[in-house]
Structure formats: C-alpha cells, structure tokens
Image 1 (cartoon, rainbow, N blue to C red):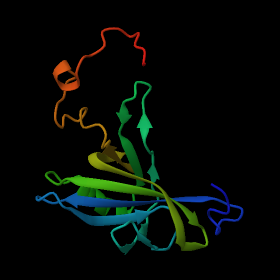
Image 2: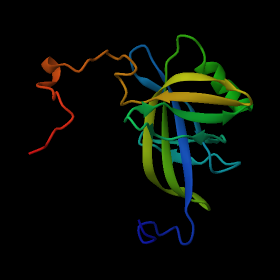
Image 3: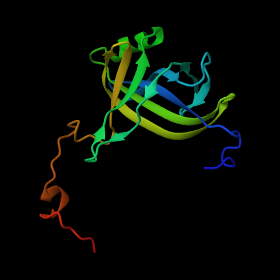
Length: 175
C-alpha cells in the first residue's frame, strides 16, 4: 500500500471502525437497528456498508479484532463501549432475553478531514453471544463465524466416515 494507492493521505494514516447491530427476525432476516463509528467526534458521517448509505453516531468503542490461540482456536472478539446514554439504550436491547443479534464491524482507512473519503480494510461479522457490564463499561462478545463446532451448531466429530482415512501418526509427509 502506497500513498499513490490512497492519494488523499499525504503524511498520515487514520483508522476508523463502523459497527452495525442487526436484530435477527424470526424469518432469519437481519434488520439494522443501531449504527455507530469511533472516529469522527461530534459528527454523524454517512457511510455505505454495501446496503446503502446511512448515518453513524459517534460512539467511543474499541474492537479487539480477530484472535486465534496457539492451538488455532478462534476466540470471541469483543466490542468495549463506555457507560453513556447511547450505550445504555443499546444495552437494554442487546440484553433482552429472546432477542438475537448480529454485529458487523468495518475497519476503514479514513481521511481525518473528510469523512466521505475512505477505503475499507476489513469486515468482521459475528453473533452477539454475550453482553454485560464490566465496571464502567459494556463488553459485547461476538462469537466467531468460523467456530460453529465450538458453539455446537451442529455438534461435529472427526471420524473416518466424515473425512476419509485419518493419520495414526504425527509423522505425515506430503508427496
């Protein structure tokens, strides 16, 4: 990536994250309910995540990003939000029993002087598996979309019937 790839960045690089919380309807469709971004203070920039442009409130939050253990297991990612008026409204909905939520976080390179200039670096989508207060902050945990086995959706076992002959030694050579 060079300055030529992003001509609106001459001598600085700024990263922003935009989050959408979707409520999962009974028919499985996703309805966008809450939108926030963590870069443009006192601003509600318009951002198109691929589903049409929408306004995003400023909400100071941190996103832990994708984490993998030494064993290759995917760890839940987290959104850390402060205890303020906006977040308390979100929290009431996220913690309501019987409602299911999905969150999508886009990480962008942005022009600090112009919210309409950006390039998307990554998108992470995960199911909200836990939300709760941890002192003065709200922590929203997102389950890995790649970890359906660990989430028991459905339970799977590695067997010869499912995967063919399995090695019986750790000394495996690829031909």
